[in-house]
Image (cartoon, rainbow, N blue to C red):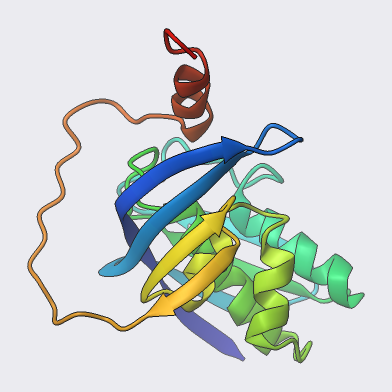
Length: 191
């Protein structure tokens, strides 16, 4: 069996930091929406787990345990005691460190697709719950659409999608690491 999935990029219409948790995560209040721009993934049955990466933004990605696709596969395997493998191919088109959730979306597509390929039977709610172990944006990326996200990104409220609009996204600088952006926020003057 082969499964093909589009991993949709997302944008943040708003992002407010409203606090910091005891374990130093930032509490957020965001309005996020999926956009049509996407990475593509293919999942084939295999005895082992492998990842091949192609595309415009593939040169800086490793097909290792650091990659969120592999991490998602291993989290699903551990949560379901499933020992199956998969040959995964990722065609990377969403720019990295652009705030568009490419890695999170790839992880979400991996969870949903491998849940189907491996026939583990988890519901969307169960996938969302375990996806927090991979990253804060992954629960949003599982369902997509337009949502208000609170907490570290895991408390979601689905909103009605507005009519489509044209959107031009320009990244005027090198990519920004989420970790570095939040660290800069924490160390700004007067904080």
